[in-house]
Image 1 (tube, rainbow, N blue to C red):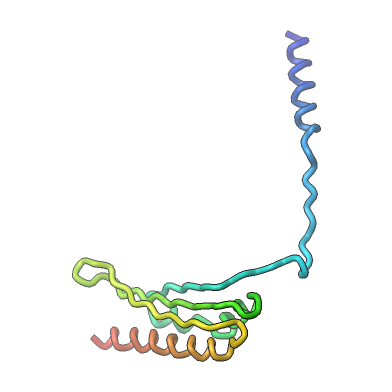
Image 2 (image 1 turned 90 degrees about the horizontal axis):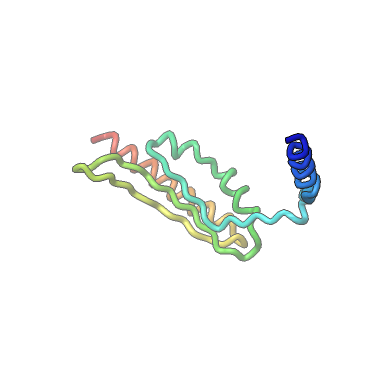
Length: 123
């Protein structure tokens, strides 16, 4: 029994120390590549839309490569309509070479979504 325990301990030690040591290197900015082509936001109120900051959206898409198609989709949840879940979605598309025009489109769909919830609350 003593021999078996010794052999077992030696095998566990050999297996444990025989593994490759993982070498973890911290990434440099040159090696990090972020690719964000599409971004979807789901909201259920006007407050949720207003918390969506255009500066944050711009910063997210500026990380993408040049001349890449990008899009932002806002999904407005209406709730239940006749027992069926109903949603409205708005989408803005553009290119990373022209972020300013893309942000203008995002402003438009954000305004439409806010108006959607304002009209809904009037009913």
